Image 1: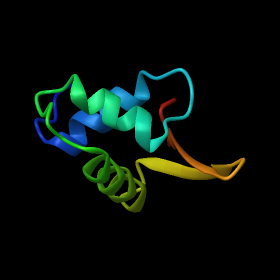
Image 2: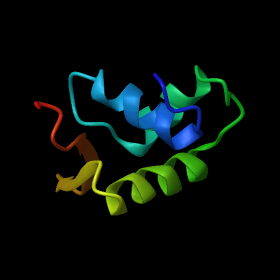
Image 3: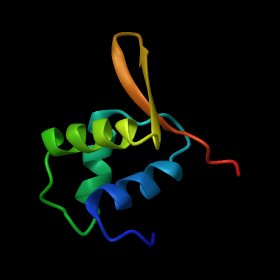
Length: 74
């Protein structure tokens, strides 16, 4: 993971996940990061920012929003 920002770290961690990531799972990933005190609201903001930058796709499934990486196969 080369990007030393919290959002860069999260984006790299999400690409290793086998299933789409929810806000709850993103908060769990961040708890094991260099930013362990990051909460669920910060995880939600980071997911939205990564989606706005075109790194993640947001999909609503069964009333829940999940996020998947975009363009990982290059």
